[in-house]
Image 1 (tube, rainbow, N blue to C red):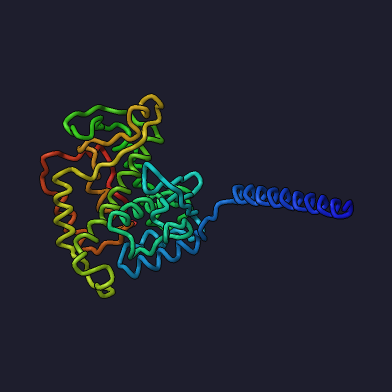
Image 2 (cartoon, helix red, strand yellow):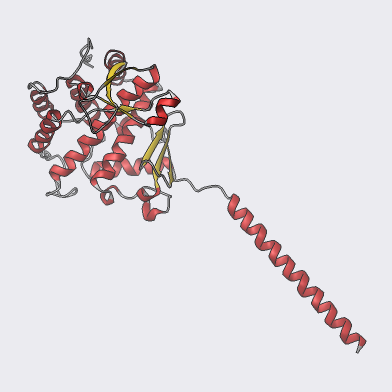
Length: 311
């Protein structure tokens, strides 16, 4: 009987040891899993895929083709304030997980699966990538140098002393602001990016009856529809940008400060963006110029800006 009792005690100790071991194993496994690094997408491959899909869908690629595939890093996170963010200091694009394939955060959904508003947001941020690339002086072409020189001229003559609309719903209420170097550069970038996103969204909207993939390669988009919407946007003074104030106390009141209608995108800026960034056809640019020369209820403040330098 004593031997049986000893045998039972040994089994009990064995099972207890095994249980403790399994518990420690599960604990360690959970710890390793919690500390495992996030899986980021292959950014270079994502960029090349994005470019190929944009071409197939007749979306603008002129400025995208100038940026090296390895320049920007993509990440996906659960964003709350915006659907996308670009951090130029790190050349890092952060997209909401809803824009990823199956919301898995590994790669971007196919462009044909994105809504028009999602593509507008994406192109807005892609333009920030392009301007970041130019600001790093990585571009060497005459057109890139000319565009950056023009941007700096516009920054100092149009975006440093501005009017803002403190209450977005009351556009008649305006306040004068003297923007810092950082604020004025951001105001220009956001104004330009807003137009790029708007231009892509507008073209998708006016072409939607045809479908994104039904238009034969090389055929003209719906130019008249796009020009009509540009005319309306100009009448409404809708293409106005914004900036984030550097003053922490002002930022507590409003994260963004929107420019007044007088400081909306000017005609020289818009036409140069159509040519050098979007790669618009000459006739489309000519018609846009005609629209912008018409008198408007709210005049655009242009300052003493120099005309863009021809590349």
